Image (cartoon, rainbow, N blue to C red; front, side):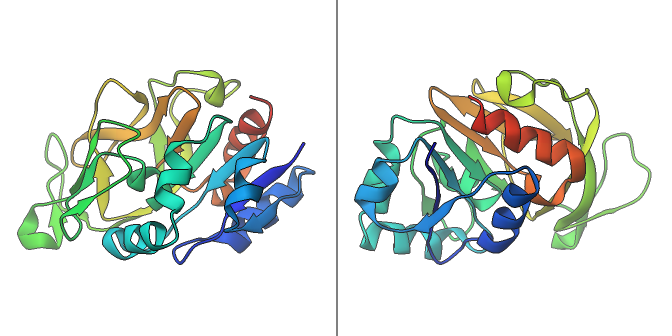
Length: 206
């Protein structure tokens, strides 16, 4: 099986490679369109800023390539957000694979937001462990409801028809999305201990 990680200017690639090694998998890191298209599975990681990342993808034709992939694709963090229709981060049109829109956590003057039900101000960006629930699809097979994963993000994907996992941070949002052969997770499975490793294994076995 050939597993490819898309190389671009917003990848958290090394930590993903280490996580794959821990579960006995290896991957090729490339931005070559033919190599990506020929892969059995594709991982689209990301940390950084949406408009810059989308500009990079468009300049190299990777936006068209990603939309046209037919094998299982997993977007991680910014990768998942770029697979949505639109991001409020610098008013960015994204890949449009998922219909959900990406919004900024807001409240508390931009420095934090009120959690549902009160109880103090939540910091923005969200950094640290939070749980995932309402889990659906094979991607979360063997993962218990309310399992904890590691998040780092100031923007979130809204709930919608493609939501397959939810998380609460001020409000409920999509921490997992799925449409056809495309999957996305807002958290970092490569930094989410055994839960994250199981999710990566599930993706490889799709």
